[in-house]
Every structure is written in structure tokens, then in C-alpha cells.
Image 1 (tube, rainbow, N blue to C red):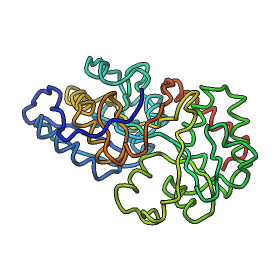
Image 2: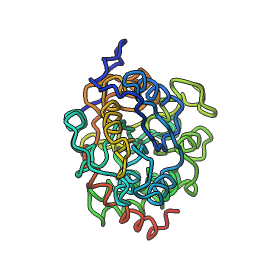
Image 3: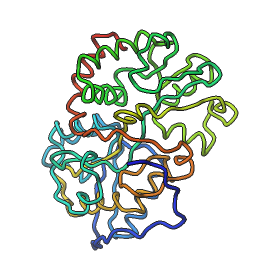
Amino acid sequence: MRFAQPLTLAFASLLALPAYADGELNLYSSRHYDTDERLYSDFTEATGITINRIEGNADELIARMQAEGENSPADVLLTVDTSRLQRAKDAGVLQSVDSDVLEQRIPGYLQDAGNEWFAFSQRARIIFYDKTNVTNPPLTYLDLADPAYKGQVCHRSSTNAYAQTLLAAMIENFGEEEAKAWAQGVVDNFARDPQGGDTDQLRGLVSGECDISISNTYYFARALRTDVKGLEAEAIANIGWVFPSQNAEGAHMNLSGGGVAAHAPNRDNAVAFLEYLASDQAQQYFSAGNDEYPAVPGVGLSPSVAALGMFKPDDVDLSAVAENVPTAQKIFNEVGWQ
């Protein structure tokens, strides 16, 4: 699979969805993007189902669902990153869904083995670098541990889900021993202590604090499309990027996804909402509205995302990756990755 298709001018029509008279859906979401409003309003217009939202960070929402137990009003949990979706599954707050639409639309490696969660959008976690200072950028994730890049690398804290899932994928692809050696090598190459979010890693390149960083693509694509403080067009003109490991496993993909709550009072509506998120219309809006890659193959990309170029994504089974997250955190602790 490769990502390089332009965004079509007209959205494809919605999947056939039932209309429920006076229906409602209680959505617990840790997606914090204003552009998602379009997703919700279009679903309501197509189905007549009113969406009631409770927003918070993923851990808070999962804990809330656990505390509410069988009395929980939650119908759907939406969150970002495989590790958080797995955390929800392990906490027992999701249920298995048998949907031909989701099975046909969402690739198998982008859904839970037990059908408790499904990915609906993706972000590639790639290498960015200062073109004025780095003439031979790392071409693979493993290269980031090369002593040649000592004192040049910026990254987020080990408590961040993106960092945890990347290392968990390294464990799945290369084994625990090599993944630990890699993590130690990256720590040895840090330009500064881990800090901030992905946008801060890109700003570190602009400020000169580091020469190489890792970030999810949608932060940079957003800066290409619109004004982002500290990442204006002139500021990022000297930032280059590499989709890592193109001759091997491919670029690591983070995802955003969701599942039906274990005690969903409006289960049919919840399944209909997940199926809507897999429609061409919703999939294209993930790209156009939030600079993400669709989860459904063949859906077009927004210009800002397409501008990053074609690449080979890592199609490792993310359900298996999620199970490696506790081991990843253990490794982070052992190598002193703060």
C-alpha cells in the first residue's frame, strides 16, 4: 500500500445508513480537533441520530467508563494511538463488533484481533531534519541510534503514547534485545532531555536546539496548510523529511480509532457511527480536515498530506504491537529515556 492519491473534488456518497427516529449516540472522545465537528454534523444529518459528547483525555475516559460499569451511558469511545485503544480493551470497556462493512473497509492489520477496536485514520511517524546542518539524514529508525548523530536528536518523553508505540513496533519488528539497544543509542544521541509535543520537536529544528527529530506527519502537514506559531513557511523552509525504512519494514503508523462501549445503551447506533467513519466521505474528511491519512485504502488525500510524497507504510499487525507496550515502557525505564 502506498499513499499518494490527490483529494477528489466531490466526496463519495455515504454508506447506506439507517435512519433512527429520535435516536441518540453517547460519544466519549479524546480527539481534540475542532475539525471533527463536520464528522458529527454530517452523521446526524444522514441518520437523524443526535450525538451527545463527553470529551477528556483517554485515561480519564477509560477510568470513567470502568467506574460507571454496566450503568455507563457511553456508546462509543474514540481516541488516538494503538496503546490507548489496547488499554481500553484490557480495561474491559469495549465489546466485539461483527460488521461486514468494517471488515471489508478497514484492513485487518488496522483492527483489533477480537474486533473490539478499529482504526479510522493514520499518521506516519517520520524523521525530520535541518537541511542546513544535516547532509546525510538517517534513513531508518535504527539509524537514529548511530553515534554519528550524537547530540543531534530530539524526541518526546517516554510517557508519551506515540513514543511507546514506536518502541513497541520496534520490538515486534526486531525483537526485544535489538529494540533495547536502539533505545539506548537514541538516548545517547539526545540533543536535550525529552520534552514537549510533536510540534515542539519541529520547533526545535527551527530554533537550532536539535538537527533531527521525530514527529507525526499531520503536525507538519498542518504547518504547510495553515499558520502554526513558530512553524511559519519561512521558518520551515529548511526542514527536510524522510519516510524511514523504505527498503525494509516501512514507516511506522500511528492511528486514531474507536470501538463500541461494553455496555452501550444504543449499540445499533454505535455500530452505525463506526461504519460511517469508514465511509469515503468521513475518510476524506480525516485527511482534508486534520491532515491525516485515511485508514481505508484508495481514499484520496488532501493536498497538504499528498505534498509529503509517496511512501511505504509498515503494515505490522498493530494489535500485536499494542501488546508490546508494557515491555516498551520497561525498556525506556532501563535505558534512562525520561
